[in-house]
Length: 407
Ligand code: DI6
Ligand code: FE
View (tube, protein in one colour):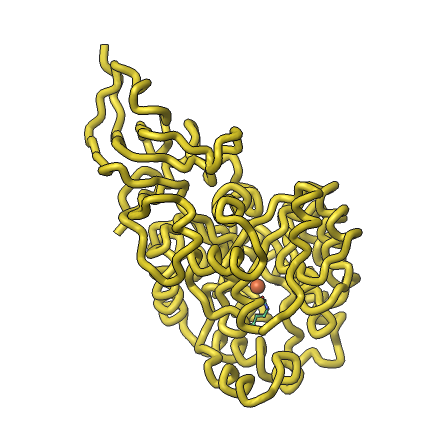
């Protein structure tokens, strides 16, 4: 009796990223059986069940396969761009000076409010194309450039549309506290009231949000303000994430851990107490080397402490118009190695297995294992370390999202 499958990938080498002891979780000379969008079986080709009968058989000519990459921190949906501010920064102004003078995030808010959903979707899909060229099959997208009910919901709807039209899995995050709108300058608590009492409930009831995020920084929001929003999120059963300790140590990692956050992101200035808190809470540390590069930061995240404490480290693009205009996961992987001294294997785990966990998707994607979604990238490389080594070299041969070959 033969057993039917939709697809067989064979004659490939698999970096499964399963932490089973072998570097990269490698299976030499592998085969993968796919059924109904999921990996039904993966193993050495010699052990392929004799009864297996696949509709489509694809020989990959010895190419490497990995899990589809996961970009677990992006601001992919926004209006306009900030190349003008980039020029100002190169003439001497700092990111903080520009932010305090009404530029920065608030200038993107203005542009985002002004654009239609169609315009926002078109530019987001454009940037998504950059990520897909790097084998990305899952993308987290944050709002936070609307800052009022209509514009936040608009951004979140566009994030969902990116998932429908882009051929990737999208996690939509309501970035509730990003910047204080000018109109609320002397009424911070009223902005918080609006977030907790109006925007969050509407986003939840319309099914537009998978997690809640905030920007905890002296130029943004305090730990008490973040805590109020996190309490409201948790009360509605939503997981939280935090932009933490990016520009200064404001005990952001400790705060994230207190709310059992999925992730604490940036964490350049996190100290030993913050690392210990992340480890105890099982919170993922998300490293964002694109922002570190663009802002010309000098203090790298506490990588050695994170390693010692066994805090999972994810790597993401942080693609946003202000601090990380970088729609590329392979660039993020390279920069995580070049700037933060991750090993190529750590960086690739950060863009797959740990990134899945940073989105609460660890049972769904992030490794090549039977039962998970058949999100698979096929690469023109001789060794997996090449994925971290080259900067700007196209290496993707093709990608499958839920078993379907991508465009
Ligand atoms: N993520 C953010 O939200 C801020 N920095 C970061 O890495 C600011 C983004 C922006 O300037 O638009
Ligand atoms: Fe960010």
